Length: 245
Image 1 (tube, rainbow, N blue to C red):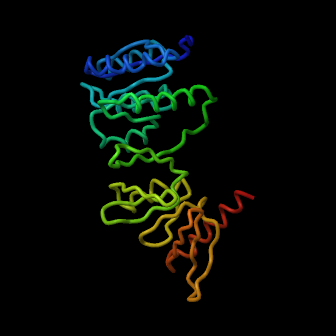
Image 2: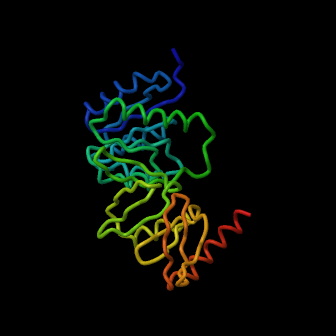
Image 3: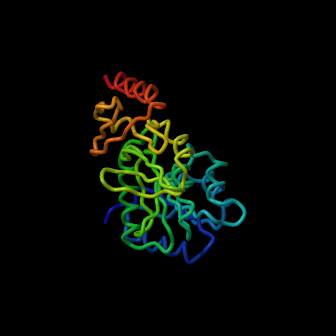
């Protein structure tokens, strides 16, 4: 039997929820539970007293909630965080807080197993300088986590934004304007009023017979660049090419 290598802190105000995580963790002998907490104050005290590798952190707890725990301690001083919650509307905030994963209760064995594989990959490799930025979207199958670097472009769709990963798209209830502010750091640039494009996905820029530039993406999509956005978009493409060369 593998020896326990990594310590886990479980934080949830519901005893049944803590017991459920313990039972699921029993299938992974590489992980040992080093403590349980019922609220945010206990979590902060436990983190000061020990150095767990992972914390399964409930979001809604009495007094200090899961987000406030991270704010007070800072993300840099937190162990790997897997959020636990009965609601899926906190997913975006969870990944903005640099959580590794986000589990909606009740958690299935398959979903928990996927999280444990991610944890083992993360713990088994040297910690990167920056964790992969992600966006969480809700689908008919549950919550899906999209690494930002896999999104080719983003399209305005009413009150939603449609995120395109290859030929597949996902709806996110957020305006394109708000997303643009978040995605600038990830080399997303506005091509026209209804489209953001990840520069790393641009394979070429062609011109139509009418003199309209078109960004041809790795996924095969072709996005017209508006007259207003033309200079900024083409300059951003050139800057990225210079960085890559």
